[in-house]
Length: 517
Image 1 (tube, rainbow, N blue to C red):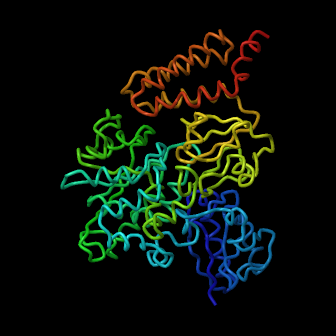
Image 2: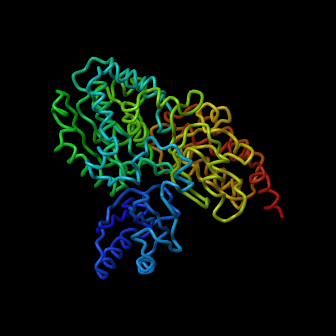
Image 3: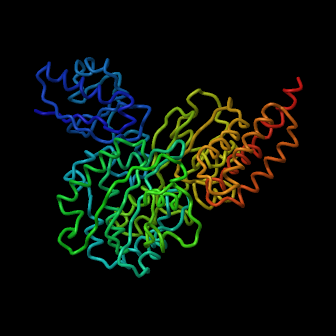
C-alpha cells in the first residue's frame, strides 16, 4: 500500500531543510522497499516546527516535527508511515492547539492541498466563488463584497467594495485589476504564503474582481525577492488557462480575464499604489499626486482596482459563503479575519489567522509562547517598519483598525515583531529614519531630506549631545514629515520614532547622563 507523505514546499520550510528531508525520505523508503507518495503541500505556518511532515492515516494526518535529515532513519524504524509514536510525534495535525484555536478563512487550504494541483483546489471548494460570480451582475458582486465589510489588508484598510464600485462606475473600454504583491514590511509573510501555497485563490479572487468591474486584464506586481512564488503563480496561471478558468471565455460564460505576473523593482516605496503603477508602466517608481485616484485614472491612465494579495485572496470565500458569513467574524467596523504574522524575538513564530478582536497579549503569549530568550517582551512593532512601537501597557488592545487608531498605531499588513527588554528604543527610532532615507523615492522634501536629518539628530541623542534640545528637534522634524510628506513612507516614519520617544523616554533621556559619566 502506498502511504502519502506531506512535506512543505514553502520557502521558509525549504530554508529549514525541507528539500533535503524530502529527498532523504524518498531514498530511505526505496532502500526499505516501501511505497510512498511524497506530496509537496504548503506550510501550516508553524514555522518553529519546520520541517513538519504529515502522514496520511485512517485517523487523519499525523504530524512530526521539526524533522531534520538525521531523524529520517529513526522515523522509519519507529514505523512513522503508519502514524506510530516517535520523539518528534506531534499527534493529529487538526488537533494541534495552534491550529485548533484559529479561524482560517483566507488560509483554509494552505497546508492541506498541493498548491499547484487544480483538482486539489477544486476538491476543497476552489472556484465555487467564481462560479457564483458568473451568475451575478457586476453591481451585485460589488455589493456582496461591500456588505461583507472586507477592507484593504495592505495598510490603509480602505473598504474594498467602495474601491470596486468606483471602478465599476467609470466609463472606459479598458480597465485593470492590479494586485500589490510587493510585500516589503518587516515581519510579514502572509502574501508570500498565499502565493506559494495556494496560488489559485489569488487567481480566482482577481478573476472575480475583473468580472465585477468589467476589467479584462490583471497584473500581479510581485516582490522581486520571491522566486518560489513566481514559479507557483506562473504554473498555476497556465493550468488555469488550459482548464478555462482564465482567457477569453471563462467557463464558456462569455466573460474574459487575462492575468500576468510582473517582477517588482525591489524598492519599498513601490508598495505605495501610485508608485507601483508607475513601475508597472516601466517608469521609475515615483509617487503620484492625488487626485486623480487610481480607481479613476490608474494604470496607463485607465480605471484600475489596486488591492493587496490578502484582500483579493479573501474574495472567493465571500462569493462562495456569502457576505453575511464573512461579516459575522470580527468586531466593530473590522469584519472578517486577519492573517497575523508573529516574528522577531518570539518563541513560536508563524502565521495565525483569527477574527478581529483578539488582543496583542493573547497573540504574544497564547500563540507566540512569549519571547524566544525567555526575557519579558518590552515592545512590539505592529504594521511593518512604519508602525508604532507599543509598550506592555498597550498589549491588551484588541486587533481592530479603529481601536489601534485610538492609540496612534496601525495594524497595517498584520505583521507583529516582538522585542525583549534588551532592546534600545533610541536605536530603533534611528533605524526608522535610516530606513526611510534609504527607501525614499526622493520626490518630496520632507521625506527625502527629513529622514536623513532625523537619523543624524538621533545619532547625537545616542551620543548624549544636547539630548533635550535634540529630542525637541526630532519632534519638530517628525511633525513636518507627518503633515508634509507626499505619501505614507515619509508621513508614517514619525509613528515608530515618536512612539519610541513617548513610551520609552528613558532610552533617550538617559543618554546624556551616561555620556557625562
